[in-house]
Amino acid sequence: MIIKLYKLFISFYKMNNSTKFVLDIFEKNKKQLVRIIIVATFGALLTVITPYIYGKLFDLAIIPDTVTNILFSLIGLWLVLSLISTYVSNMTGYMGEVLGTKMSQEAEAEAYSHFLTLPILFHKKEQRGEILQKISRGSRSLQEIIETIADVSPQLLMLLFSLIAMFIIKWQLALIVFISFVVYALFTIRFVKPEIAAHRIANKVYEKQYGNVYDKLYNVFLVKNFVMENVEKERFFKSLVGKILPAVKNAASKSRKLSVVQGIIYSISFVAVLGSAIFFLREGNLSPGQFVMFFGYINLAFGPFRFFGMIYRRYKRAGVAIRRFLKLRKISPEKMSHGNKILKEVKGEIFFKGLDFGYIKGKPVLRGINLKINPGESVALVGKSGVGKTTLAELVMGYYQPGKGKITLDGVDISELQLKWLRDQIAVVPQDLNLFNDTMINNLRYANPIATEKQIADAAKAASADEFINQLPKKYQTKVGEEGVKLSMGQRQRVAITMAFLKNPKILILDEPTAALDAESEKKVQEGINRLIKEKTTIIIAHRFSTVRNADKIVVLDKGRIAELGNHEELMKKKGIYYNLYTLQKGLD
Image (tube, rainbow, N blue to C red; front, side, top):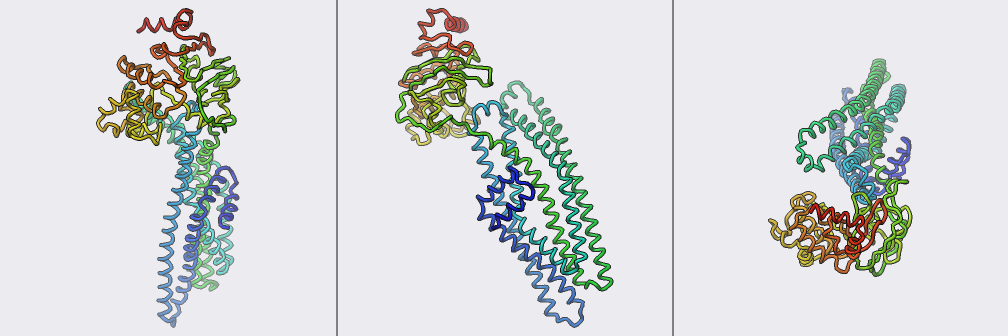
């Protein structure tokens, strides 16, 4: 019942997406919310009784023959009610803060989880810091509105009971108060629109500028490499002060105008009511106790009404951040066309049939790709930068949908396979592995959470990584630093190979695994790769030909098409693109 009243109340403000989102969260936490409302309502009822008690006390106090014990009893009752009301109010605030934090953190955790499910193209295109700031601001706004809205029921009761009490005491004075409330509400609704528009602009500026700041923080080594600390310091001040401050000042200016208008209405109405009450008192139409009682109820009534004006403004402002937060949630997670099938046994045959693909419509990256990779076969993709080697491998992972044609795994279109299952069958050894700022063993377990320490050690030995890991200060318990910065590139490559061993898939993708390595590191990495690819279908993306010479099949891509196909000896005899690339690199070596 209470939840329905809340829905009715908030629908008064307009049932937009942010409102529905907040109501859905309330529905999930209905029990805790109802508990808070009951406690807060009890506190409100105690508060409403108080002016009646001290009003009666005042009337009795000025009567000479009033029994002293009655006065002391009323004073004691007043004190007890005040103490209980204070305790209940603090308890309500505590419960509201805890629930608000819980609900906002749940929403934030869900948003971050959703962020990880978004398509790889989204992550390549969007600025990570801007998205994280959007989530953070949306979460904070959500917490504010949840903590505030828990007080709606008790505040509404206080307002209602106070108005009823004032109409009973002196309806003429109550009518002035009621008219003041109507004027206050109309001006709030009228002036809040430009304030919200200003906050909408401020939110966009916040997200954009913090996105720029986070971008520099994520690339701190690049900043240091080019000694750009002082330049970035100036840019930080330009972003956080030069760009954000004017937007905030504009929003604050609009808020100030509304606050001034509200303050003027409140002051005029308060003086008008009390001024009129003084004349009623003077003419004997109002007793001193009723005057004090009415004064108390005015304070009780104006408090909730100012509260509703504040919550309306806060809700509207928070709605701006929450709606931008919800835009991220609306982006569909990556998904295959069908995505239900699971193969009982994977052999590892991959077939590209008439494949076309482009990131932008009308600008194909790959065209007319027909390629069969047999189970256990190693295939190297070579060609100049930008010809589509990495894109072709990412299509196998299901990161993108082909524009034309299809890719099959053991004769089944991969768009029919369950996406998680498909990726479980594939391990990628990237050109440069980014690791978590955690221990070595926890990073390795990311590939296989149930792997034993012995299995991890055996995989590290097979990947030629065990030797350097045991030389680390705490061996497998050593923290590797953010993104693995405490390790060399060659060491990170061997960690990547270890993780591939632990995953033990049927299909491997080696994305330029020996690029930018020195000769010694390349030798150790290559030893690990040779052990890893045995009896596995392997796609090798490489510029350096040390990793492709022994491949069963070499695919030469040029302008998005397969230009040459064969093994090393066959392609060298053709003296075509592969021959030229190989000869050029051999000359450079």
